[in-house]
Image (cartoon, rainbow, N blue to C red; front, side, top):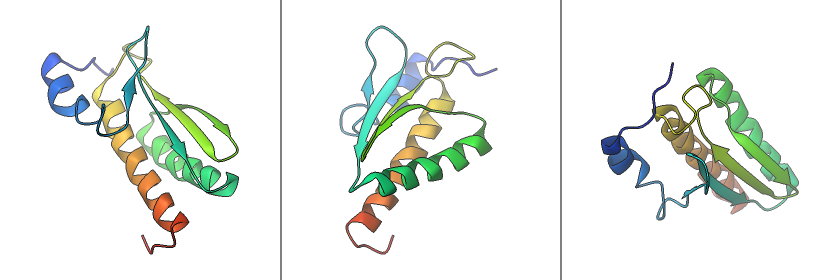
Length: 110
């Protein structure tokens, strides 16, 4: 069973994602969220597909909501009712997937 992040883990691992990393804490629960905007629905769905395949391998799944080119993601671990190291790992993976998707969107070769 996953365990809640310790105070030290929150400082060392969570804080870099909050603010400068674009993630934000969710009011009223121990969770984090971030919104991603892509060029169109196809790019947003490709991003979600990429994340879904990796999340399935991790056996840790995001809460998300998609409208056209926007994807809103919320992370929290249900087993421990809050943020765990699994959320940190998934947030990092999601950020990498978004960067790859945006490189393709901008015509890069990522």
